[in-house]
Length: 445
Ligand SMILES: [Zn+2]
Ligand SMILES: [Zn+2]
Image (cartoon, rainbow, N blue to C red; front, side, top):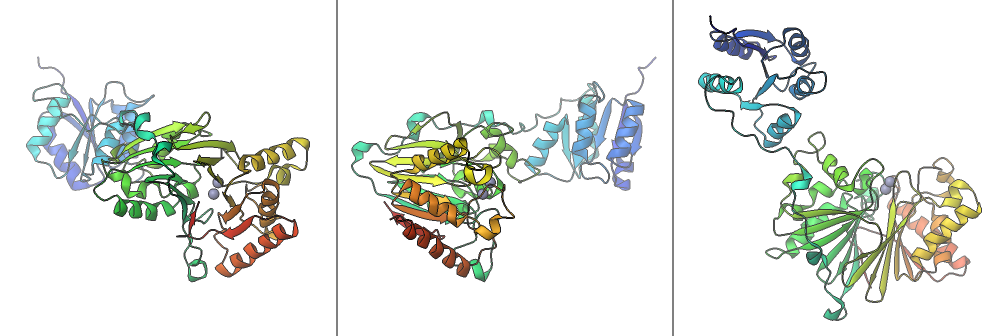
């Protein structure tokens, strides 16, 4: 007597395709059908089929979720899953594979091809299914080595060093004629040391920096270092749009600290997962590595140290020393004494941050609110212009660029607020040259 026929469940919300597949398979198999993912999950649980053939885009429950349920804990042990979909994007194929699909057949398919793949999956005859693209894994990525990381050594003589602002907005990018003077892109600052860009934060300003670097380094290898103070959206949204990442000749290292909920690499991998972006991080062509800083980083001619700031989650500021010149980048921050009251501890913590910046030729520091606005924004993790002025007086830095401008702040208001801040510094007897950071502005050091 012949063995019992294998059981197949066809899940598709397209009635015609569902019937076609069912007709085709029923000569050889016991076939059941379901009209969408939810129906498919219920019927699969009851029928325990050997194979589920599922569409991807269906109402109530899509194919990725169904795959996950069938193959996950509480699923059907031993069940095979074939996804059939008209979506032929490599990311969909790798994502379905990651969700548990054993095979992926792009629609429209030839009847013979379906039969051949089904037989192979069920271990009947035919060849086993073609190997699927590997799901995205950052561990497989080639990272630059430490020897490739160095900025030109000090022996190269005095290197030209300058800062250029590419994104000066905080919280959210903005665009309207009233803000065009200072610019609407979020946090991104370039510190150029000779031929090496050292980049602070990857807000939307990073896109234009990337295009500029791609033009400048056309046909040449580009090596850069990216320091991310924290990974809130306004500091990472430009990351996938940085065109130098798509050139296999280039090498970048991303530095920060471990995130509140996971590793630095994981945060960036997730930010480019299919739910957020069409291209996975593993597809970036450049050599890319992630370093969770435990202390100062020696880049040869430049040395970068960090300091924890007061901001919801994990947030650090950076200080770069290059051949006797120092630049400090401090965003985002709400002074400890402002938020927690003037206890010995909070005063000491604020003094530590001022000391971290002391002696800098340039401090890039945030100030997002007026004193009046602050009353309703206390605890949001940002400073006022008064805080910035106090900071200039305490740290005695040479120059201070105010950045992370509130998205609602117009050019006219910003001019007035910066003037107010300069007035406070002068009144306090300070000599810090304070100015508002604008997109495109260059400061030589
Ligand atoms: Zn921010
Ligand atoms: Zn933030």
